[in-house]
Length: 153
Image 1 (tube, rainbow, N blue to C red):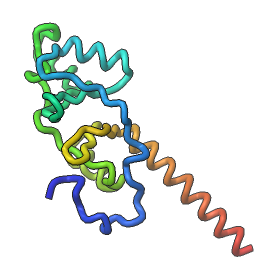
Image 2 (tube, rainbow, N blue to C red; image 1 turned 90 degrees about the vertical axis):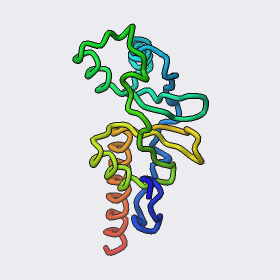
Image 3 (cartoon, rainbow, N blue to C red; image 1 turned 45 degrees about the vertical axis):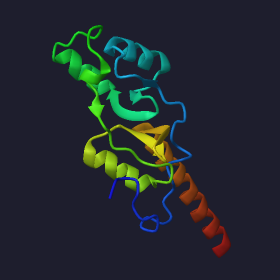
C-alpha cells in the first residue's frame, strides 16, 4: 500500500496534516537549472522545490540535494534539476494523519513530502509543519486536561 493511503481508522484521534501543510508550493520544470531553483528557494525562504512536468510531480529538490550537488562538483548554472532531483518522491494526501507523516519522514530520512490529492499537487509538508502540528496538539491536550481538572474540583 502506498504511503498516505493507510486505513484512516488506524490512528484515530491523530490530527490530519491538511491544516498544517503549506498550500504555496514552489514548483519548477526538470529543465530548470540548479542555480535558478536555489535562488527561488532562497527568495521564497523554502527548503524544497517540487519538480513537475505539466501537472505531474516527477521529482523534488531539497536544500540537501543542492549541497550534495555542489559537493560533487556539479556546476549549478549547468546542472538541471532532472540531474540532481529525487525522482518520483513519496507523497501523502491531505487526510494523512500527523503520526503516519512523521513515520514516513523518519523512515525515509525526508524533511519534505509533496501532498497530492487525486494525483494533483495540492501542498507540501515540511518537518517544521509537523513540529507546528505537534505543538498545536500539545496545547489542545493541555487545555483538555485543565478542563478535566476544573470539572473534578
